Length: 155
Image 1 (cartoon, rainbow, N blue to C red):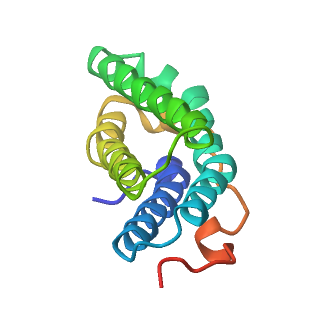
Image 2 (cartoon, helix red, strand yellow):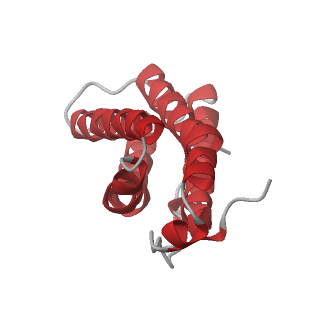
């Protein structure tokens, strides 16, 4: 089933996040520089993932709160977002390891898959087309960090 047009901007952003996860995993498997991968992930966080989370919190969370099942999903999304905010704060302060980077990639992928496979279909089922259109989700018009990062640590 094709994603509702109004949710497609978030799905495109999810695709970029999944690419970030893939590249981090490739870098981990190649034992690439931890500092380079941490820098890459922080740039992805600042320019792509954090704004995406903020957009979801402004638009999706209130929409999810309009029905009981959606409220549970909203709570799960907010927990994941908070865990990621905390992780990104620690990423600049902590002793980063390949394992930590791989775990962060796994967590982000699980979050994206949850939204794509569970939350979005739930929204499409429980909200009218008019309600979905009122979400006014926007696509960022910049190149993904994956496409512009100068060090190809994953190669």
